[in-house]
Length: 408
Image (cartoon, rainbow, N blue to C red; front, side, top):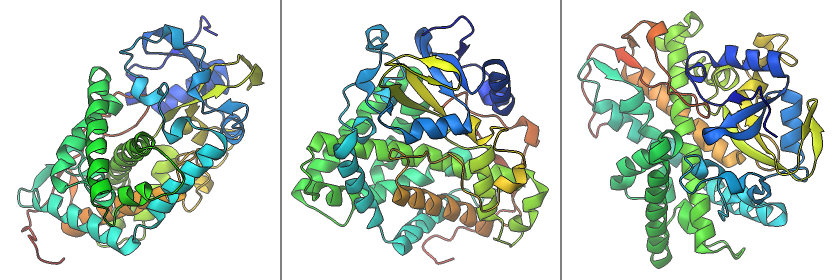
């Protein structure tokens, strides 16, 4: 399926100007773009909103069964994208049909049982602890010192991990997503941690997500449950951290949100939703595999071809973006949480939203005169075509005393 005009899925433009890059791709190649992954592995990037709706809505034709891939013979054992694409992994990402629906129900039930008031309380507690560590100084990096630490601490507590495991999980998850040569090591650390947690909870169940999944009577093995927990942790941590960082950047650089920075709260949800449309943390996702030869967006797709889901490209498709303002605000028809039976489970989406919104509101409560410490144009992004997040978000503010154990 390799074409001479295939676009390498790497390079600085994914970091510096992704919106223009997707426009150029769409102009030069149409709604379905031939791309090259690490090592020159060919794939298709689906940028069209309607085409992406078709791919994610037809699991029979565009399957999540990675065994269909026609490139496995060309994939080395140390290929850096293996943790993302997977091969013979017994996780929910690569099951299909009734078994997938059973696994999705198990995960949704375990997450839905999370008490929303307890969730917000835990998010506030961890957020306050993180702000306590920096509020007396007067300056901070809200990405590395805050956004990158908060989601995993909350999720680890929900799943049943000891708080002491949080820093190691952060490192492992970040390596899996952005580390390339460190990706396999990060995956191994996460797998070991999940295995130990499952062993502990089988001996002594508790009121947590892991115990509820182990108590499910659908007959899933420990390995299957561990794989699903790894997927949930990875999918819940980094995108939520980037959602916090990208939303704070928008609120600190766009005058429309100035009121929220000085005592208001009505624009926090609006800023978060605009980020999902215009600057979504999950830019591209792998993927779907064609179950048979077909056509999509004017392209001939061969059986076994890999299709990558271009979520940000679809969100910015001019065919559905005749008026950008009409698609922000309360409109949630974006693809940022996916679509179809393999989309992000609704309870997981709600948990991510509570963590992100609470994290943003705690910053605004605790650091009321916060401002960028550098010019907005100098803020850099991580060089990843998959997830879009800030490398740093330097801010300054009037130093304030730490709360310690006192209530806000």
